Image (cartoon, rainbow, N blue to C red; front, side, top):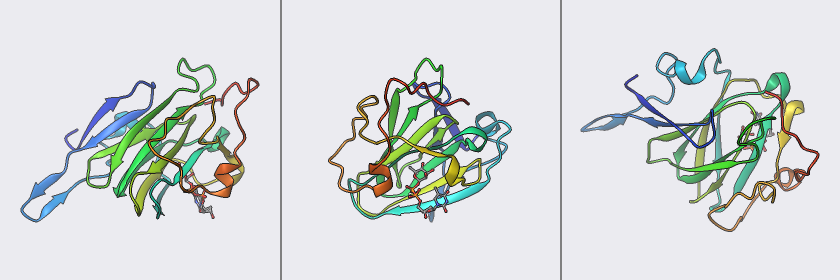
Length: 186
Ligand SMILES: Cc1cn([C@H]2C[C@H](O)[C@@H](COP(=O)(O)OP(=O)(O)O[C@H]3O[C@@H](C)C(=O)[C@@H](O)[C@H]3O)O2)c(=O)[nH]c1=O
């Protein structure tokens, strides 16, 4: 493995990847994904779709999203333009870090990506205007299997770095977690 450094996070299974670009006088080339180099991270999972998003406004939040059941997926999340505070929340039933969150800075000019396994909700807040994100997903999009957690849910208490300036109607309507929520099966 010479294109990535894989680092653990405080949440088991959630991994931070540092890409190792090959630079020369023109600039650099970096690999965003490599099946062989990342086999220890992805295991048997197969990348089934790649999505790109643009978020125009600084302070906007997208999330917190996951797919459940047989449509559960892992994601490799990379910022390719701008800067975001990227967050994953452990919703795995029985996990020792259930409802804990972890945030990392992803920078379009940096080299970090986040590998988010099944059973985690994911979201981010933009720290600049015009942020582009690139997602590798290990499952097809299945709207009926989506679950959302409100980004400002007090049971999770994510410390967003700034005021939330924009959010979709859907994200603002995600239900709040209560005592009956025991997590998702993975
Ligand atoms: C997630 C998704 C959405 N869509 C469609 C549905 C809708 O018309 C439009 C925008 O969808 P959303 O509002 O769900 O987009 P967005 O809020 O950007 O959803 C994304 O949020 C981040 C935080 C994630 O982790 C991603 O996995 C994904 O859930 O794109 C797809 O066609 N394929 C997809 O995989």
